[in-house]
Each structure stands twice: as structure tokens, then as C-alpha cells.
Image (cartoon, rainbow, N blue to C red; front, side, top):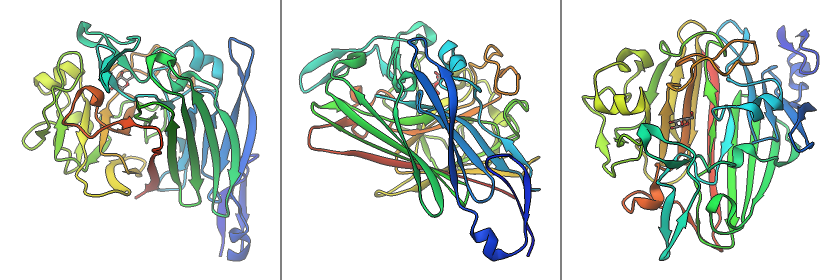
Amino acid sequence: MKHKYRNAFTGALLSITTAASLAAAQPVITMTSFGTLPDGRSAQLYTLANSQGAKVSITNYGGIVTHIIVPDREGRMADVALGYDMVEKYVAGSPYFGALIGRYGNRIAGGKFTLDGKTYTLPTNDVPGGVPCSLHGGKTGFDKVLWDATPLLASDAAGLKLRHLSKDGEEGYPGNLDVTVTYWFNNKNELRIEYSATTDKATPVNLTNHSYFNLAGEGAGTILDHILTLNASNYTPVDKGLIPTGKVTPVSGTPFDFTTPHAIGERVNTVDEQLKFGGGYDHNFVLDRTGKGLVKAAEVYEPVSGRVMEILTEEPAIQFYCGNFLDGTNVGKSNCPYTYRTGIALETQHSPDSPNQPAFPSTILRPGQRYETATLYRFSAR
Ligand code: GLA
């Protein structure tokens, strides 16, 4: 049997003639320099390559996934993740491309919440609709810290374990939060993210990854023809400040119904108050799930390349954002400006503003408890 794959180090196309020698192709992890932070510390880039020649690169700065190189239906590789090729560009300005988000992914109204009778004030760093809120962990969220990194290898996957100690009071949050995030990329083109945290004071925690995908390849145009399915019969409508009203509303009969596959562009410009507030899709969908464990949250299909991305998660909800704020200011890896709606983010998480929404599932972690959750992105083609 003849198989083709690319050498993870050189990119050279190799031919393997026996199944036995193919089985010998092991996942590998390599480390290169990714540039220097303003304070002089250096950032590294870790590339996890699997036996298929597919690769995921991650930097310890912000735990950012910088590249996801996966095959189309003809086996042609493309990088489906928006991002940059050096840390300096992430520092200079990034709308959270590929980043780990914490301590609280998504928005907290007015940057305030009350926990066990005490009110906490967080710095506000976003003003959608003119209404200030705390977004994605604040001014220096987990997307902007240098994580301690440990490369890992298993028989069928390469991994990277990242650790960050978020200090008591950092960005206004209570408690020392010890966070570990482990990325695994296996031989089945599955990227798994395992999140874990403990605290010494009660605190909200809502971790996610903010990758932007374009399954035709980053820089290859809009995502309006990508076909999306969401396993969500309900979503959380927002006010003009993109804060949930507290209602959990059926999507049925609205442009938010992705329970069957729809092109993202099909209804995004419908005259609708919710789409107006978000400037398009920028909403939290409550997953149809019972119990714990991974359930399918989303599937994205790009008809020209045939690439498919499935997302499975242990989280209760997913934020679907279709790149409405991308305006070409951010010039990506292939020197292509990322213009309006050229990337889609699907952030598994608890719903926005949960610390102020008693009816939403709790995001409070207490001493003695362990925060543990996982999300898996499965890439294939058809
Ligand atoms: C999230 C939010 C969006 C936007 C992006 C970053 O997806 O929901 O409103 O802030 O992050 O630009």
C-alpha cells in the first residue's frame, strides 16, 4: 500500500510503501522562537504534527493557537486558523485570534458582580452599543500572559501543557487561580483542549479558546458560504450592550435557527433587532444536552474545499461570532488583511454575564473544587 504524507520538520512530501512503516510515523512536537515581548521575555512556538502530516501550532504567549493545517477532500493542506507569524503582532493588536480566554470568557455587565455578599469591580475594556462591560477577562486577560509550557507526547498524539497562576485581585477577580490548559492533537486530526483550575477563594471562572476559523484557508475570503449547524434549540438574546437579557429563547422560526444546516450568509443581514445589536451573529447558543461529557455543539462545512470541523464540548453553551468587527486592520500570516466576516469564532463556554444571572448555570468555583472541562475540534473533509 502506498501512502503519502509530509515530513513534519521539512514539509517534504514522503511516500511510504507499507502499512507497517506508516504505523511507525509518530506524532512529533517541535519548538522554535516566536519573538520577544515588550518586557524582554521570549515567546516560543510549539508545533504539534501528527502522523497524517497535519499540524497545530501554539505559542505560550496567551496559549494562542496560531496555525491549524489540515487537509481538504483532495488531501491538500491549508491553514484554517486566522493569526500571525510572530508574537510582536499579537502584542500589537489582536481581536483574540486563537487565544485562551479567562478568567471569564465573554462579557460581565458593567464590570461588576456580587459574590457571597461582596461586590467586585472589574476594569471595563469594551463598550458595545456605548455600554461598558468587562470582556474576555479584562485588560490583561489570559490571552496576554506568558504561560509555562511543557511539551507532551503520547503514542497517537502530541500535546502541550500550559500553566498560569492568576493572582488574587488580578483584573479585579478574587482568589489565586491555578490554571492548567492542555492541548492534544492526535492522528485523527482532533484537537482536544482540556481546561482545569483550582482556587483559594470563590471566583467566577469561564475558560474558552477564541480561534477564528476559515475552512477555505485563512485569508481566503468571507465565511458567508460556510454551512453551520448548531445543536442548540435556544439562545440568549442580548440588549444593545451585548449582555443577555436573562431570557432563554427558542431559535425556531428565527435567523438563529441552525438546528439544521444553513449558510452563515443566508440570513445574517435579515432585519432583526438581535442581528442589529450584534452587527450580525454574536450570540450565545444554549446547547441541547443532558448530563456531563462531550456532546456535539457545532459542525461547520466549507463546500469548495470539503473541509468539515465538528466541535464537541462539555460546556453548556457556545458563542457564535461571525467576525463582524474584522475590518482589515489585522494583517495575517499570509499578508492578507482580515476583512469583514472572514473568520468565524465558536467559543464553547457558559453563557455571558452568568455571575449576574441567577437563572444561568453557575460559573462560581470554590476552594476545594476543581474546574474541569474539555472541548474537541475534529477536522475532516467530504
Ligand atoms: C467575542 C465577542 C465579540 C467580540 C469578539 C472579539 O466573540 O462576543 O463581541 O468582542 O469576541 O472581537
